[in-house]
Length: 164
Picture 1: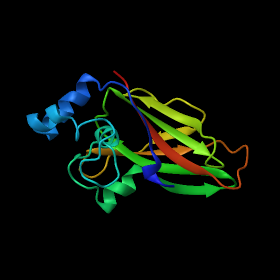
Picture 2: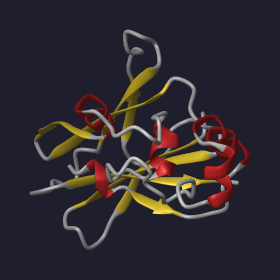
Picture 3: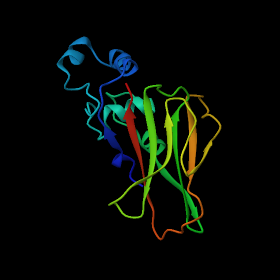
């Protein structure tokens, strides 16, 4: 699992994203636009603004190892069933859709779970929301694929859509 393989689909930033920009960047930085686009990486850690916005991270600070682990990690595999876990903010961004994708090769990806804003999870995978973290700011999400078909090897990634 490589959490930084997250796919970004560019659309016009929504009003809530613009508020996040105003909270984290100066007026001059916003006007220049080089650090504030959905795909910009102002901290230089390889994680784009849309991902940091969706996951509740500061765009100017490189992710710590703990923050990186909250993006996506293997939760286990039993009898060909794969599971991944990641954490989302307790208050998800209403203008972001999170998509979990799976692949047996890196050539073709299939959507197995989707959540628009604070809505319900949809898709073929079973999704379980765990108890909040100790500080109450994040919730773990466990995504498990159905038992069939049995895969020899499985890859997962998160994809984010900005929805105006």
